[in-house]
Length: 196
Length: 182
Image 1 (cartoon, chains in turn red, purple):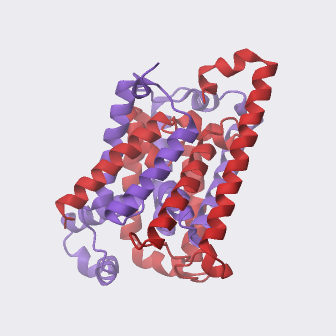
Image 2 (tube, rainbow over the protein chains, first blue to last red):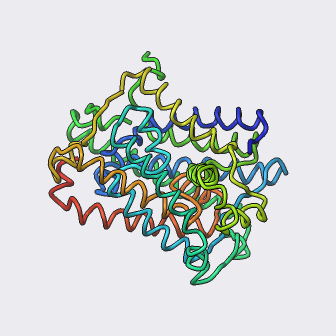
Image 3 (cartoon, chains in turn red, blue):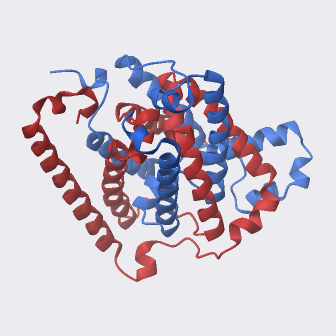
């Protein structure tokens, strides 16, 4: 029923930092999430991209040092594809994703709080319908718990290097564009929503 | 110099790098990727078991999870979700970035300022989103960050499709004119 107290405490501590960073990164807000999909506010992509690049380097280093193991979700195509469609529509209408809605609750947002209750209902429905859903999840094939390096028979470090290079290039491009914009119209860079 | 803890926002690159470092910590300290929605599934399963005890016999779910060695429980990830709530309270309190808004401005531009309408739709959309996350076994955190950084095939497929569908949905709802109201 319960993990060990140490593990529970570690989970809580990790969560507090996660919620703090989500709130400081402004992604616990409807307008930032929807603004991303309207291509008006690139906060979500910048934040997720940076997290993935930084995270990949450290996690693959930990795995190489035998200090952690990979935890790959299976590529059950029916579940992943149907799930992604439901998830995408739900997130677009709700204006929060699961983590950011919980952080939005912490910020005091009422629509996020009601949405989290809805999320609980969605989870309950999934458990109740599990027997009917299991064949749907397994339809369209099961590729197993595979990674991109395994599929392509390449080193994970090749992929990590590509991620770092791609992220670095995107960062430089963003800074360069930001400087050009600031040079043209200085007040824009001082807008609070444009804070970097 | 302004105290970073009382600032309303950090650069997305700084906050993102922080989440990346936090992933290292999660893997190193608990050998666990950061994720949110498995905890909701576990809680729902525990509630269903408590409310209708015979569900354990009638619903194959419980036997399957037991066999996988992952019976529903209060675990690391469950506490992580509680922590996210607390962390956001701390951050928003320090920066006075709190609000009890019900209807976001963009939403009211499109659908009017009925609080009931916004809350009913938020409930339904939250349910659909979570249902999808459990079908796919992950969300923006579990697949979008933790899965993609592990280079998982399932996660790169999930996040690409989910974000493409979300983009199409948002444009269908708010359109070009809505983009001027963000």
